[in-house]
Amino acid sequence: MNPAAVGFQCPDDVAAGNAGVRRPRRTTGLRGAASRWGPVTLTLIGVNVAMFVLTAVLTAIAGADPLDNYRADLFQRLAQVPVLVEAGDWWRPFTAAFLHYGIVHLALNMISLLVFGSELERLLGRGRYLTVYLVSIVGGAAAIQLLGDPFGQVAGASTAIYGLMGAFGVVLVHRKEDLRGLLTLLGINLVISFLPGVSLIGHLGGLVGGAACAAVLVAARRRRPVAVAGVAVLVLLLLGVVFGGVG
Image (tube, rainbow, N blue to C red; front, side, top):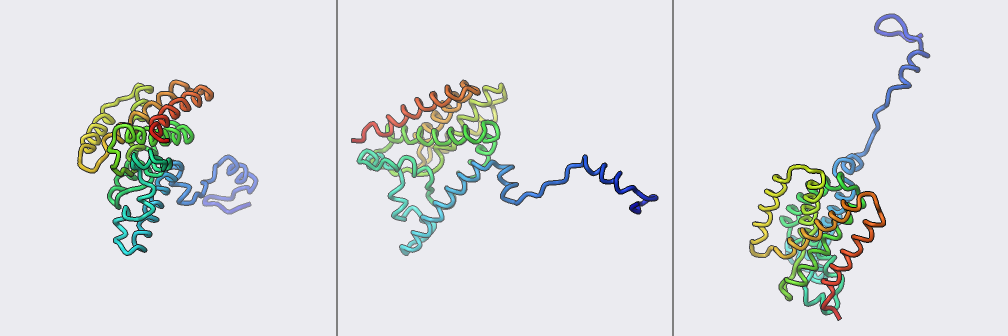
């Protein structure tokens, strides 16, 4: 018998009572963050931050201010410049989406990614969410190649983030939920896109690409072959625009 606050308790009865009680699970801080914000979103943020740190370190090694990370030779080799893409630098449209001009540019984009990305990852699931993100990058790159300044340099995750906003809108329409908050925020961001040094064309391309990708995934529902085929066609069309002038 075990002593209790009042009288004694039988050990067998205590064991039987505890058998139906779930013990709290201990989780690490990293696992808890992934559960709250989404592992894909946190991974994407990690890649963007790592690229910023790398270019900042290389800039410092070259003797310049590390906050002027865009001066790094690596940054210059990875940023999107339409004429250089046409000349054969096929990787630039993709690598440019993980570069940022300074700490403020990085911080603003990563906060937006955390807000929209974590929610969309929860709604779509990891695989479909990552698909939307990557297709948005291609959509933004296609718009820049087609309509942007041939000699202008473009970099940043904004194309993907606008794609997430477009996809979020598609999901809200599908779920018949209120769009006013998203449309207001999107309108504010589009106004900001008219500021000097901001790629409005890239933002619109990412927005359209993300919305189109989400529309395909939502329409396909759980029919995976239909979803894969639809996204593949969309990606091929966008890549055709990106590399249409190469060769």
